Amino acid sequence: MGFSNGLEDFPLVQVSAVTYRTLFALTESFISLDISVTSTGWGRWRDGVYETGTFSVQAPLEDSRGRRREFREFLTQLFGTTNYEYVFIEKPIMGVNYDTSSSLFQLNTVPDDMIDMSLISARTIIREDNNMWKSNLHKVSGFKSKIKGDKDIKGMVQDSLRLLDFDESDRFLAEDEWDATGLAVGVIYRSLVLKKAKALKKPKTDLRKGYNIKQYDNELDALEFAEKRKGKVYSVDFTDSKLSILTNFKKLVTEQGSDWVYVLTAPTAKLGALALDKGLSLEYPVSTLVVWKR
Image (tube, rainbow, N blue to C red; front, side):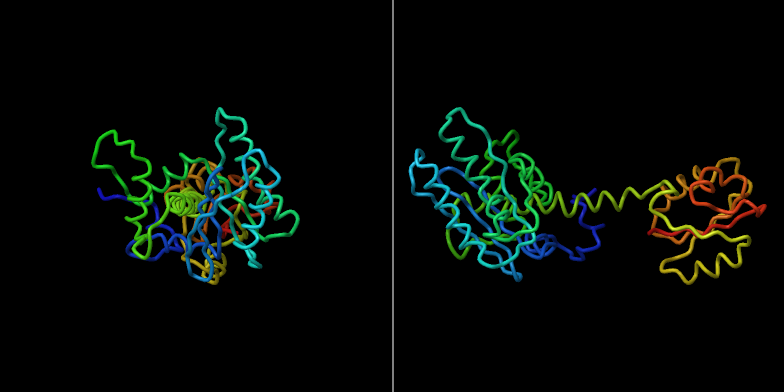
């Protein structure tokens, strides 16, 4: 069995090979920040163009206000007047040195404060744990170390990105630039691909939630209405089933998925809780329901 990263079932990705640009194109725009005390790597995606760079705060650790001021000036230039869809930030890790940890945490929250004060503009901030984004970067790239027990994390990030066609041939890239890019790939893969792919693979199975229902007293009228809906029609007769319509539908949608326009025929007495919940008529001996996703 070949490697699968879940993108083959993702409707927004119709390509034969996944690249970093494939993933970035799932967003309108973003800025990715790998913030550290000494140097911050950044990646910026807008108008289909990806750029990277680094920034170093010059003020000493003891000058916390000066460091925050420098960082604000840097972010002001980086963001400009663009309203970014996402900002990706690596979660800070508490170290043993108080001054270093304090400075790191202060810089990490500067983007939030600037957005609140309308100094820069972004719609969503996503913070990601270091191990989480690296794990998802490796998954989407299909990277596997040739050396068992290899702990070269820096090399893993770069090799994973190269597998996704990230080309650094134009100039030498600092480690922080690699990390900012890897962070973006890992976050996008988790939040925009895996979550939606998971939702696609696990359809809602409760007929009372997430579905439109129209009741008929005969199958012909129901089928005529169903044919006018968007989607293929799937007709099932539950007349001889001893189970409730809710149980039968759960089994059906688990096997067939939720993209069909279902035409379900069953004794009205078997509608049970569904009839009460949806206000369905109980006057027909047999009911035919047209069911489709909201």
